[in-house]
Image (cartoon, rainbow, N blue to C red; front, side, top):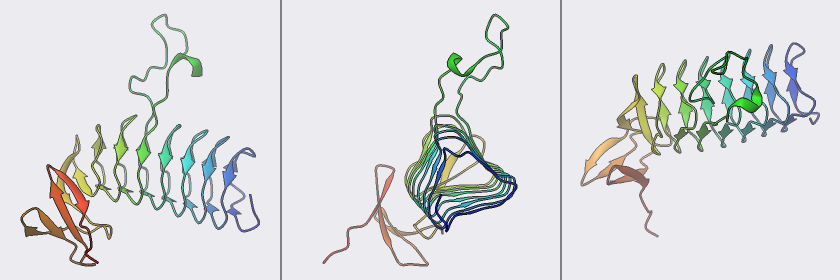
Length: 202
């Protein structure tokens, strides 16, 4: 860890973890062995980052967010308070013989969060799902399947209710499968249920 890294005294950061410059780990957070956290990240109070988790630059984990291995969070991701990224599709404390399960008794499946996406407070992401670029998962949502780029999903289970742009605001329909962002003016095109950024003509 470089001199520009701030780790509060009550945080528990394993010496084998790597934390990039400009990042802060707040009180009572835990960062496990071999986790990699990029530059200018914020790991909130009581947050958990599991062994080997990969976190990009400018990522925010809010208070008590739980990120279980082997999750991957790309640049610019936001994870809200008490959100949970799970890693076990069929969790059990014991095996069929009644013996306590150990690390070798199951296969962890991490959640992948693509660039710029946001996860609302207390959302739960089921093991193995991918949330697309700039997507938005509403607070309290249970995500059980992949979320497309730019989708706003909500509910239990999650379903798409709107499209959002890179600014995070719902897009306005412009007709003929075209959408635009009211804040930035960015243009998007929907084709077969998939949203793409419109090509800017030179």
